Image 1 (cartoon, rainbow, N blue to C red):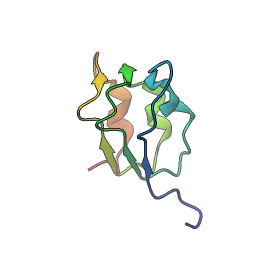
Image 2: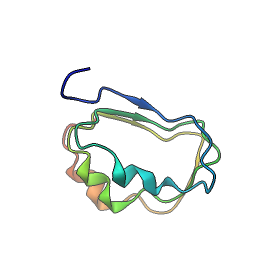
Image 3: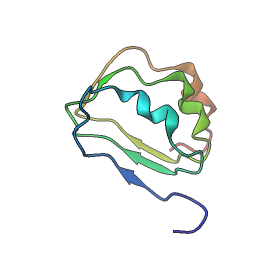
Image 4: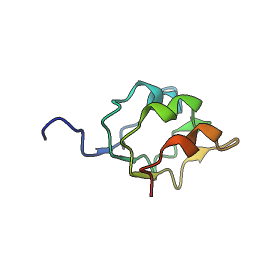
Length: 79
């Protein structure tokens, strides 16, 4: 894979359903897909701005709610 994490397809069931695990991911991640995981709940954490290499984010068909954090705007590579 090299020095960059290319993609994470997050499909495993999370026992507590907490989406805050995003803030613990590698800053070299470029593709995050958690769509379709209805066990996930909560809000997108403001610390998502640590994923500075992120170009693609899929959170469709989850139970994610709340406001979109303004920090998402700092991800200049996000398409």
